[in-house]
Figure 1: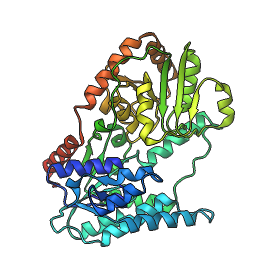
Figure 2: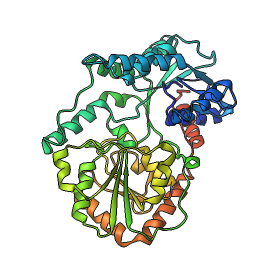
Figure 3: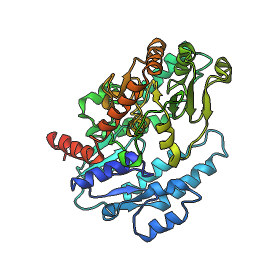
Length: 401
């Protein structure tokens, strides 16, 4: 496995594969196994950079962990320096490209037969794997870039001022993505929506749809209903792609008395559009990771009206916290929610459907709490061990492992 900055979903999958004795190596950036001197160094810096605690893995992964901190730190420094020039290469691009190259020239465990790498960080590794006859699994964590371009074009037609021309990715990067897909023997995605976003040429390859494991240990569920005002929460980038403009219109139209709409995350909507909603919502630009669980527990409902998401981790986080979710099929909602049981799935861009569910939520607080409890029970039924077991079974059935 290869991922440049030990994202939670990558580390979760590494644990899942290790639990099946199918992980020969996990190549990543700044990381350490618990109990090691490197882990102690990371903990010493945690007060200044709290996210470093996410880079400390269970001691059981120490034999498979191949940390490359120098590569990640150099890539981040280079990305910061490049900001001084117009048209600069983003830190994200430096990080993925440099990590991919470093992995491609690293010493791989001799027993390695399959390479699992992520979009934007797989090309060099896949080229090497192809030369040696190793299987290549490409993880696509977001909708395909052609689908995203189409989605933005649609929103620009409908909202020309709100959804201005999206800065497209450079040609070299799009070519890199396309070559990674061409080199892959199979594609792994976390939702049927992401699978449906793939272009026709990808359909000749096996497409594995395996939802992420629920982070149940990281989020404590609520145990009683709140009798205060209805609190509706939205977490993440508050943007056109996330459908925030549809949520605001639905919230205004629903006109719920003694109810609060709380937007957590950067607000990326045109100020002129937002003038129609002044005083109708609370906005918190950032909540520390350690406190986000309290936000979910304090809410009666999470609304995630996304137009295009590879999955949407916030869905699982809310469910783990005992909070039901109102979302669209344009992400991982259908993989996590049975409509009407742990939450609701409504069509994208459907303001009327959002209004209907918001009004139902306000009028049926007890039902809302029961749905949240059902959400937590469902979360407890799908762990990263289950993900690893499912991936191994799918690859084995297709003679890819």
